Length: 131
Image (tube, rainbow, N blue to C red; front, side, top):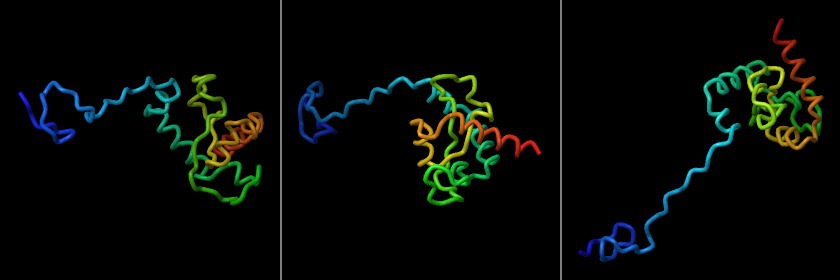
């Protein structure tokens, strides 16, 4: 029995594949880091860190690593100093989290800004926050 195809608009047998039918997307398995970032605990911690750092990039405010604008609050992300792929247990620890702009986030991830320096900045922010 021929029917009107909703994909190509022509008449053909209902079992015939005209090639216009969209292919369903296969969803890839989420990584451990992606699953972690989808949790409520991470969203709350990310908000807490941004509040701790006053919504400012902590590298820019210290005029380090080619800073263009000292008080940069555009596109500020919370950076995991120890990547989640290496150690998820430190994913919610304030001493291993830092607010950075997109420009400095890339530099932190590729190693241009050393981890030791990032850890010092995060510790300074935690010390300021405890008072």
